[in-house]
Image (cartoon, rainbow, N blue to C red; front, side, top):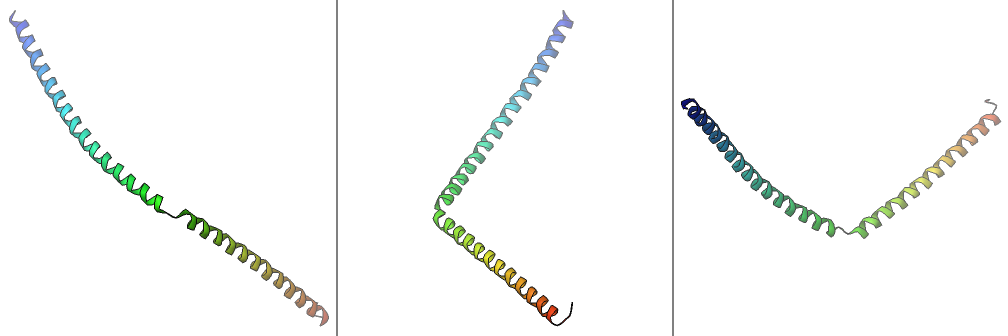
Length: 104
């Protein structure tokens, strides 16, 4: 009977230790959850600020700037083709002069 009583006391002590550990874990989880909720609230407020800033962007101006840039790129492309054409004509004129003077 004494052994059974000792065993029961040991089991009760272990259950108290386990219960205390579980209580500490619950408190830690509650504190961590509270901190997480605070961070999430701040993140949500920051995201609202970002969304408001994005709404303030004038997309029509951005689209106009893109169209102007595309127009400039087309003009540069046309200018490049014209320079290539002039280079070919100068090369052919140089070849013609070289042939006329007997260089080749």
